[in-house]
Image (tube, rainbow, N blue to C red):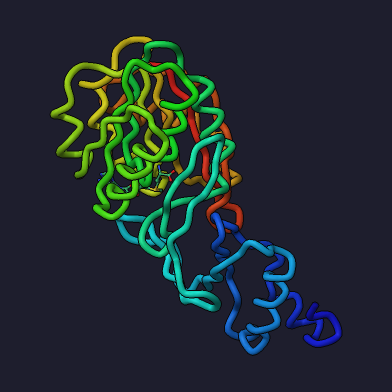
Length: 266
Ligand SMILES: C[S@@+](CC[C@H](N)C(=O)[O-])C[C@H]1O[C@@H](n2cnc3c(N)ncnc32)[C@H](O)[C@@H]1O
């Protein structure tokens, strides 16, 4: 829609991709082309008729709660419902972390969960991992821990809305996890910016044969070093692990990706 209106240089500055979260669009628009804001909004609404709100990202995902900053370009409501793998999630991207791009990864993990497993999801956010696991696998128990009180509110509502059994704990994993009883068959650590700081919590909570899904950011050219690096990190806390898989599951910055490393405790 902007062809013939904006210059080639300006067109190159306009991102062609954006994230659609329920009926909310999250888009990045550089300052240099903000004078085309109305045209961009019009173009999005023409293509995505169900969209009620358009948010412009004005600050990167940051802080402990991993939330980006947005300004409203269109609409007024920022809360929305997202459908994913037969589940529904109430989220407000201006207050909590949620990424549509991880839905394939969540489906993959849910398929790995065996019957009667005890599963711990650290850094649970609004609950996509624990809820999809509880809905589609046959675990014995799913425990979810989250620090952001607003995310916990959504997590509890989402557990109710999806009619699943997930035990929700609000708080810092550093305080909550040591108090959880027994060992887990599977532990998820979906906090790629800081998961390494929490590995020390695991030795008391795993047994031989437990699986850990460890998420981290790494430069593309260092992908090959990940298995050894993670093995060493776990060995530092007394855990011998077998690396079952290294999988790229998103990008973070140019040439820096999000990886998940599937580990089995030996
Ligand atoms: C990258 S987000 C992932 C959220 C969710 N697993 C998902 O995939 O949508 C990381 C989450 O960890 C939470 N968090 C950060 N530090 C934490 C801590 N020390 N204890 C518990 N949760 C924490 C943040 O509030 C955030 O919701």
